[in-house]
Image 1: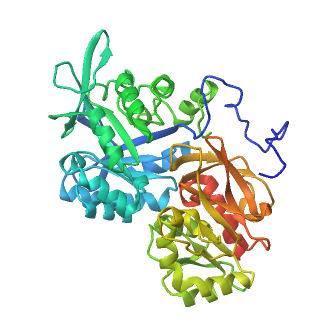
Image 2: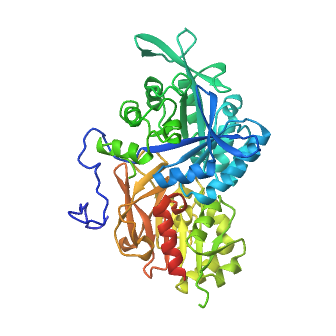
Image 3: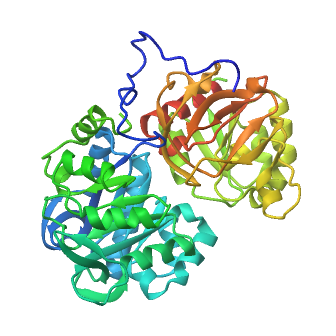
Length: 299
Length: 212
């Protein structure tokens, strides 16, 4: 466009320095990698929305008010938020919608809401409350047509399909990867990992994309709460299967885990809960770490 | 105007969630009315044309507002299109042709057409990308080099290169991320300022100041 071509400011103190430039280890810089704090929302004993985090989908600890949390993360430079209703009850949904409205009024970055979304009407009312995207898990496994219906009515960009994957070392899968010298496949689970489905995550990811999912949100039952890093073989296998953005989740213990999932698995976004909730690492700290190593982030 | 707070009308033609854009404008100091009445445009200090979804559907729904918007824009008053709302400011879009819906007329306030990304992928572009300001315009004061949040498959190609206020590059493909007409009173962003954090709020504030 025009005759002006890519002039790098030489010494302009008003411009943020583009420290991504010059690094060669990230092939083509297109969009920044997104850092997404996840907030699990439950109802406390007074019937108010409250944030909890857990280990292996159990043992929940109270950590604060969701709106205050969202404001804090926004100020710290979060690229998006994910809110998960972990009550999976009608009462929980009402509380969640109210929380979404309050967050959307205060915070001006994209907001994804998940938990208990089963019908087109659920999708509609969640978006209307101020969510930009909905994350659907078992509701889509039970009724895959919900993906098409949601995408047709509201656009693919707001339909995120979430999977809770679990490693299985038997013969029942479709797609196998080598993990520590053993061959395993990844099964979609429901009810927070308590129930299996025999559905292969890789098959399901391809189908979800085909049906119109705009993003895939990949959780790992094995890695969740461990803080020992994302499930890299799982995330990589999903990234190699679909062209939609992939949000890696479960197991993040620090900036080096984010770095690994971006550079080794090809994830587009890294989600974390407890490291941010407990202030073990700041979002800015994670981004600086990535930026210094040539991973494009919004700083 | 004796009242310092700008009366901004957000046109509600039935597409999308207006909550964030309304709250963002309010935070910038505007007195916001969401209106389904084309007559409300006449008395506004500023008008926002929001939008997500398809060009054809957007133009069908915006049909009743066409005359009011044209008259308002030709009077030199500020009209701000966001995302699909920005694309609707142009003459036409390849999207309707590709969808077999023929030639759908846009508002034609900024001559040009909207085209689909040719080589860049994946489509839609969804995420944070940076803005390179190419020409002075009050809407983009203070945001050169900053990141904004995009969700789109099509982008504007104005006939007049000078209509490109800011450009952005996605997977090697350069496109207009902010456009404005020659007079500067009709403008739009391809990204969502109401989802672009502090940068977006700054843009909304620049807009509201222009309306005051």
